Length: 118
Image (cartoon, rainbow, N blue to C red; front, top):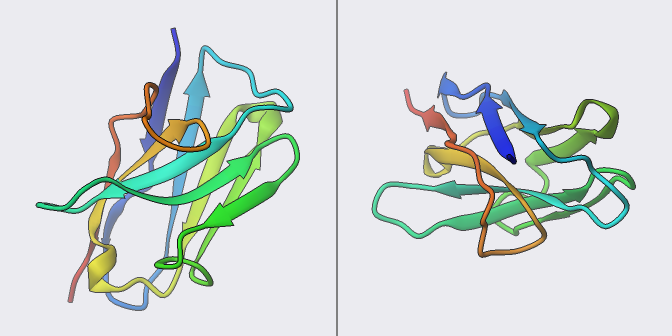
C-alpha cells in the first residue's frame, strides 16, 4: 500500500520560512519516479507547485513559487522536502505531496497546513 505522510507545516509570519517533509511508504523511487508538491487554498483549485525526480535531482517549479521554494529529496530515505522561504500571505494553503509528474494524483498525502499571517 502506497502511503504519503507530510509534516512541517505551521503558522509563520510573512517573510518567514518553513521546511515541509514527505515520507513515502510502500514505494521505492527508481529512475522514472517523480514526486510533486501541490497546494490548495480555501475556495481555490488544487495547484501544482513543484516536482523532483528523486534519483536524479531534476526539479521544476511553478512561477508562483520559483525563487522562493526549493524541493529536494533523499531517495535512500524515500523522503522529499520542500523549503519554503520569503513566505507571503497568499501562500497560505494545505500542502500535500503526491506521487507523479502531473495530475491527477492517485497517490497523495493528507497534507500539512501552512498559514502565513501576522
